Image 1 (cartoon, rainbow, N blue to C red):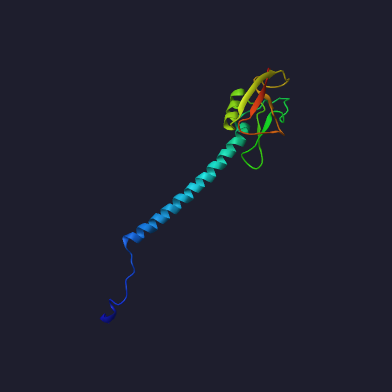
Image 2: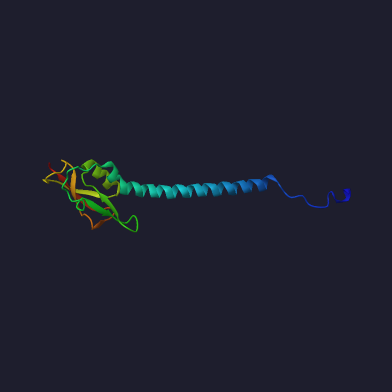
Length: 145
């Protein structure tokens, strides 16, 4: 019975094999985690870009402003342009949205529109259905009150 004790090679469970296996697992986990963060981060950026004006800005309750004139379409980010509605938003919030979209603020004009909130956006130029791209200049008309 003792004749077969040392006849077969024992499998190699050396520390070098364990280290390589652990490195492969760690690399795969880090790559998967990084990919998840990139995908979640890109989606979050697009979500804040398209939903921030609607959630943070409170348009006037009795406004007679045409929403199409105060909305611009932001192109070059996705296949379809993103509609950003600035109706009833103050100039500071509009500037923040332009900064996020990498747009330049053009001329700011006060106009008299009945039933609008004073100092709120009533029109942007160019407005939808025209599309603006990064670096374009957008003119703003504010309600004079």
